[in-house]
Length: 117
Image 1 (cartoon, one colour):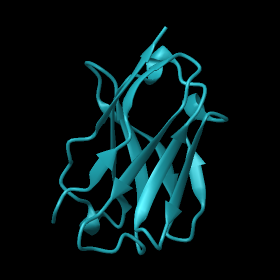
Image 2 (cartoon, rainbow, N blue to C red):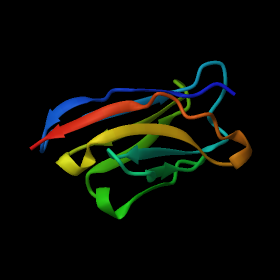
Image 3 (cartoon, rainbow, N blue to C red):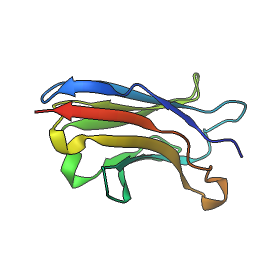
C-alpha cells in the first residue's frame, strides 16, 4: 500500500483559514471511511474529523464549528477546511483510511500547520 499524500498546510495567524487536501495515487478511496488526524508537537496523533463512504461527517469537539471534512469522488480527494484557527491547532495533519482497517495505509509525510498567536 502506498501512503496518501497530504498538502495545503502552512503558517497562518490565529483566526485564519487553511484548506488541506489528501489524494491517493493509483487507487480509489471511495469505498473507505476516511479521516484527518492531528499530531501536536510532543503529543500522540489524534483523530479530528471523519467522513464515511456515503458522505456522513463528524468532527472532534475541539474543532466543532471550525473544521469541515469533505470528499470529492471525481478527484479522489478528501479535504479539511480549517477556519478560525487557533495556536493549539498547530501540528502535523495526516489523512488515512479509518475503516475498513485492512485498507489502512502506511502513514505519509503529513502537512505542517503552524498557527501563530
